[in-house]
Length: 265
Image (cartoon, rainbow, N blue to C red; front, side, top):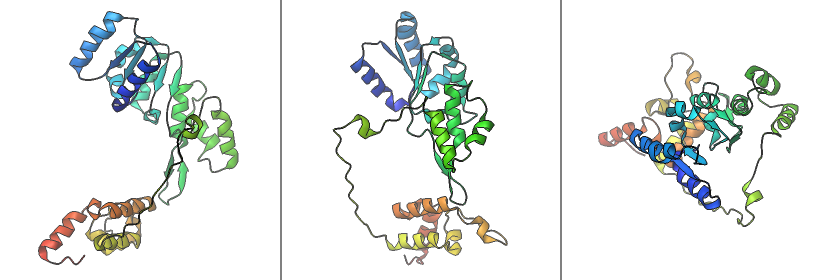
């Protein structure tokens, strides 16, 4: 199971390295009916691998759940994250001899409103719960054991728990012929328009921000409550560097000032 854009790659690699018969199930209702008629049902029990997408798995869940599968491989397995994940709920109703999840982000870092890094253990638990629900049954207990993993002992304990389930591979571990990555940094000066917005966001210039977007709303009383959080500010600064028009409301405001002859940026 993989994103639609990667299905041809998966099919090509399977055919390249194995002699297994592959059926690719995707497309419109009519297309899927033809696949089921000519490639699936006419060769029942003969195909070795079924390639499909997350969306088709949900749509065809009744059919897929009727088959006892030898195993499942889920590419981009972060799609299974979350307690109320529909794809995860569908797959949990199916029978698999083994399960393999492929992901580059088993544990994702999020940021609080104060800009503090937080490890999302709930998302990690959802993957482990899918792999072995009888062992990782209680989310509350898992979070109590590992929390936000700011403590070194919690992190060490988690490593011990993950060791039987996780195989990590870096590019340099599997491809020795790759040359070291080279980076060329080219400094480009901001335009006058970019500088004006960049400084306004950086300095919390509410008079500019309220007039030209940035997601800040004027409040009565304590204005600081409605200023952007640290992560929002970082995103707005990035938008300034790409193009000020990416800031919500900026394009309309700037163009109206230009038409009125009042823009000096």
